[in-house]
Image (cartoon, one colour):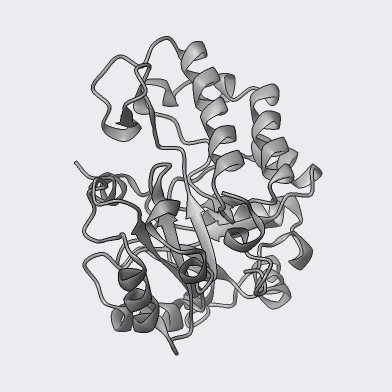
Length: 285
């Protein structure tokens, strides 16, 4: 099973989004106020088996701007499409040129940077990644959502998993860390006890150090509020995302709800950096 198939099968069900609901009822004042304070953006949208034109129709209907991300890295990464060269990246950017979307990629594994020149990557608006592919105890890449090997006891796994988040942040020029705090099925029921304040703080400290925003995922309904409150207190930036495949993009219910609970303002939200300040330009790698 690819990560795309896993995501499609596990994305949380969503109700109609805020602005689409406006057609039949008056939105709640808090939701209306949030949409007025900063435009709603889903930075984690995959085209996969759809087209940009179909996706843009949903963007208009739902009143949400989309950030389109394509998987990027070596061809060892198995997805419907993987960008692996400057030429492929340029063609992807050209396809989105002039469209009312942000242009991004989802970086795969740890060697994706070597596939592209810095000049080509700088044409993007942002780069996202997650920690869901990590080394096993022998150092071999392991897809956690389909891992068949024994992941070990929960505490030792969590220590390795948290360290892996920090290692990615320290080595890779990324702008948004997505799917954050997700756990393999074996440990998911223990989320509240495994994500201790110390573990959350370690990831938050790394995100601050490397100027990385964290995603509030309406697809996975994560991170939970304790993690987000700690991130807010640390002045981290947030980005809304769904990891959506057609037609499940732009459904930002959880992102909006938690933004209200946290009292987020425009100053708390990620905005793609200007030329010269993008992670691929300011980070050494």
